[in-house]
Length: 248
Image (cartoon, rainbow, N blue to C red; front, side):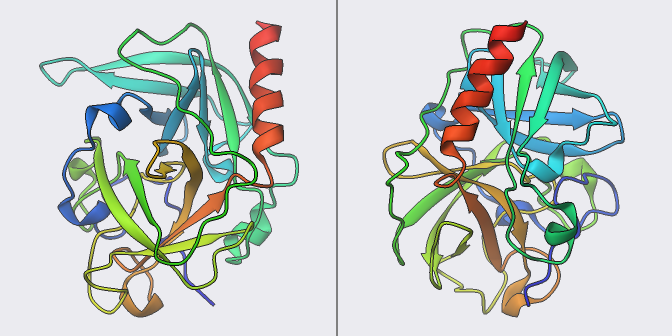
């Protein structure tokens, strides 16, 4: 059984290991789709813009008891906050299954109080019939930490191109740094990268980050990166975005 890198949405000084191994920034064509999410309980996650005022993230990043905001950084590094008007987690998401390292409907949608500025752009969702194969390269872009135990290393957008491994399916997809192959520390998502989009070569979102391991499936990061593919949940995502946008 694989072990989670704690809860990837928790972004604090006690964070797990390294966000994508000091990976570089993503190209502008992908960066314009990715945002940083903060929660009133002190959690941080990553999300993907899927409409001018809607963001896709992981289900375990959303709790009805908490409030959420998007964070942007001014040129001098000053954080600026954007209000989230409402949030919806997939009704089949099971937190007990998630905490017990079992696949679940780990997707959620945030509706913003106002549209994002023009520098952001909605990303396309991969077609429902999209088949991911072993060896395929996907690019994960997120705001997670880059140094074990140092929350100050988070909040910078980085990206890593990872190779699909094991037996990809509709419930989960596992990925590794092709240079280290889960045998030594390599690139991979980590604390703060929950909900980060995984893009295919066309720039469409295939899934969102749910969990990680350290090399050899130990607790931590830099080994496997697990994503929840959108295949089973794409219809719900589209319908929920439309419903939330129509309400406000």
